Length: 590
Image 1 (cartoon, one colour):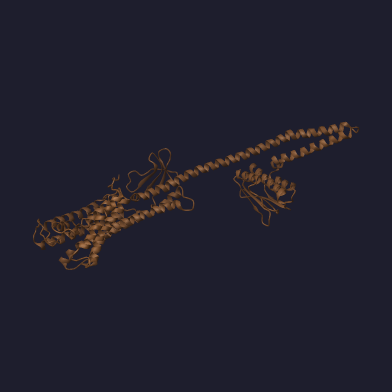
Image 2 (cartoon, one colour):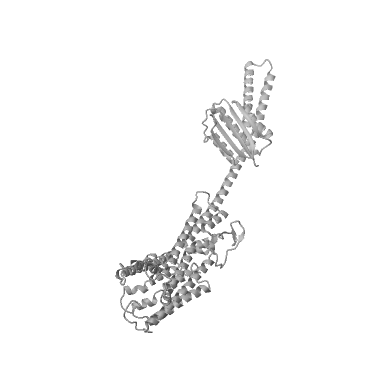
């Protein structure tokens, strides 16, 4: 469980940068022996190092408020100036205290690096290395408090606790203790590299700038700490004894904190990469595709996306039952949605928790994808219901037409036929002596009855053509072409029967199209083609008329709806060479 962290409002945190800047400025303006003009690099490196460490601490504090690394780096940045306070404050005991207490930024930096990213020392070696460094520092501090000679701390007044009074003895012990501190720094470098080795390879993209920068700091700081011993005891220098090369040791302390900033920027890059998962113009990934896209964006090949199964358990993206890790230090779990009813869970590398913004972005991306899945599923269900409903409406309309056709054939048509027979019978029974006027009226009535029967038969044929029911689509289409007042060339390649609704839809399309050719196209010829290929019926009606068919018209609009009810497609447009072309494709699956 994470500690709550040190709470301080962001604006107040910025004020923590004021003291380092002020001290650095006072050092540059009050410095003597040498002055700023005589050694500008010394003052710039010395004064800037504490500021850089403090800035890194403030950024880490802002990005990881629940972690202690941010406040610790701020403390290290402030502590940097302890050994330089004699420049600003004159008189004992400030110079001696500063000299004795300087250098404790190193154990603080080591603690930050060795506890990244888990915020705790994980191995005995880590604890031993840090303990060795701190113990060596404390022993050296005690020795300096007891034996600092006048001038050692850059001030002349004697230290009241001075012991021993032999300056040579003091310096020999002091440089030896400093060399021991350097050896402890080597242990710190080894511990940091060991920690880097334990990091999962995919997470090293974030941790390498921090841990490798920190290992480089510790490894290079060690020879600087041992340089006095080699210079005084062996007479040679393992690092530059003065000048910029000596002053550069100050900036070495910034390698770890600057690496921390680079690592955080890389985490932010991963946040941007996750936004790209849903910001692309192509279809947004779902299920296994979403899991794979998140793995690529976060460079975490073991990331797993899980969904609740509705019974209190979890399933993976393939639908197989799975369990969320419990108490696994190598994996972290982020639940998305309400705690009592999460919409999803992500099992990922704990490194992502180092930047709450990345976790929030990941949650937003996955929630959006889950919502898209749910909405898409709802939309698919609604579309399926609409299609089924439309198909039921068309089938009901076809059934109603067949009923009306039967009623006309068995009812009104039979009555008209009976009436025609009765009129003819009356005409015969009147004989040759009947009144010419009566005979004329009977002949006219017989003609009207015959015309009514013909119109009724034509109407019934349009409602439910008998040839379509009995012979199939091919002969029915040929019959339409034969009865068209405009000459129609046919190319019909239909073997056998097709599902009833396919045949009915195709017949009505052809009938309406040929009727439009006859009524509106002013065409001299037309063509009717039909074929079945790969489970689809392709029907085309073309003419050489004036063109300009309006797909939004009532007739064509009805055809479009009817074809759509069969999951087919219809296109109306100009034909090559002029006229109109109507093309329909209908799936033939029953």
